[in-house]
Image (cartoon, rainbow, N blue to C red; front, side, top):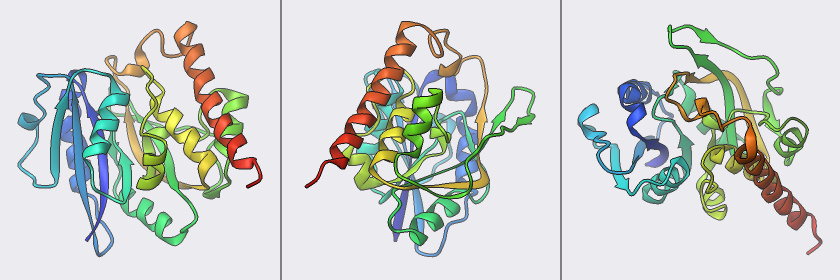
Length: 247
């Protein structure tokens, strides 16, 4: 049986939403020969995810000292076993068929290393808000995400929908050691290492709420933001230079 590992960083603010995340995962239909596992990493003591979830042998919960979402995701990845690694934030919801579409793209295109998909925001009142400006569906060339990042300082596709081959996530050491944008850092570096794939069908409902990390005042401006933007670009650019050198 082939395994797609869903990795989730879990913190106190996401407790009201974890059950909905599970329901969106449990309802996924997978191709024959595939199963999923859910590797949840509690960011610090006392999160108590187990009491929020039903008994399911596919759920594996770990806990470590508080280190932020990058540390928690990387620890969840370290405990996972799947050949494919799928991100799911604890307060978000997969749409029906999201995992099957990721698997299908990666099996149909052996040369690609990662997939992303369209996202809609799930607003506090339950409404859904879409966006314009998605790339064309299909294979995305190497470096396209980095070039878009250089021009706009935002990812071309949404990192919260990322699914990647295990060996590439391992090669990059998991998620960047940043207080935020760690998933963007991983996606941007992956895009330099390998072609990717964008699925036009909506794959994620991205929940908006006041306690999420992107609501923090330092998330989109100031010295911390500038440093995050710089190091994300610098790492991806360094990888691109290395790969462009003759061997």
